[in-house]
Image 1 (cartoon, rainbow, N blue to C red):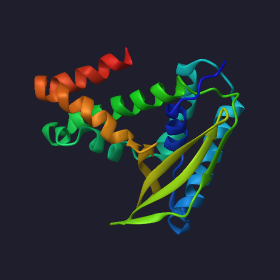
Image 2: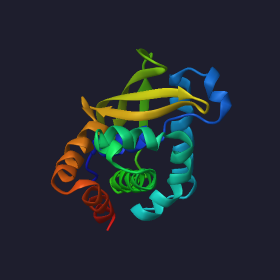
Image 3: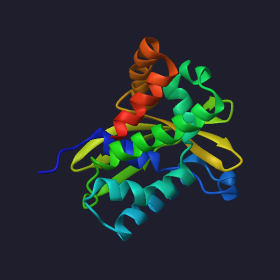
Image 4: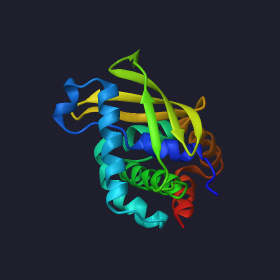
Length: 195
């Protein structure tokens, strides 16, 4: 019996962003729809129940559509400034892998995913929030996709599932680790999560 997981919705969320320059003329809603279609296409083209394999297959698409650096900055909060450039690059790599693996492990590629996007709301500074209703395995979950525009068009930088921000949820965990052991402990904890 499949169990519903908001994490799946977050994975789908992670995959809902733009492609190159064409995205700048699209609405955020159109970009999210296109991104979702591309991720689901990758999943259906090579179905697997192996979470690590699924993560490996969807990662290139997610990297094209998702702003992992922005998400990592938000998740680390003040801790981001404590990292040097090399550590920041490492943090983005580790955190993006944590997110992808975490949510693909809860994703059932045989289940139908239906997401209905509502009209975006302006957050200012080139950012918008797109509310949505995500239906998966008979459950409907309220999800909001926060997107920002840049050279590559609209890209997701945070996801709010049932009122809980993905970035803020991780920030609470990371802040505690950083305060006890500093930047090195923070990066080590991310590496440990992947083991």
